[in-house]
Amino acid sequence: MGPTDPNKAKEASPESLRARFAADILHNSVHGSSNEQHAEEKIRFIFGDISTDAELTSNMEKEKNCSSSRDLSSLLRVAPKVNQSP
Image (cartoon, rainbow, N blue to C red; front, side, top):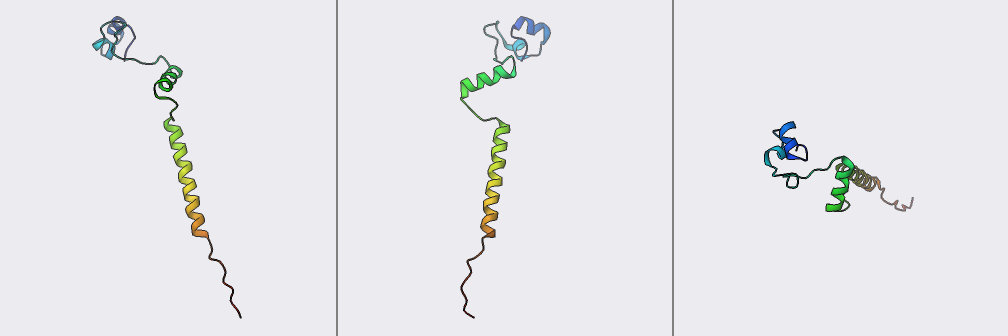
């Protein structure tokens, strides 16, 4: 992506998006967060409260385990005993 200032980007990272496509510091072709916390704040602001891949994977695993438990319990059900007279 390159430094925010396209003039600096042209010097430091000439193949970066900003060096190649930015007009000036206000029109620097792309927006990026400066750190992970800033990125999370921006994502939450734009998309609302969404789950991360790790949370989705964890939830899918829990759901799969729960589903497997239900399937197993249905297989283990024993038919009611029938009263048989001797």
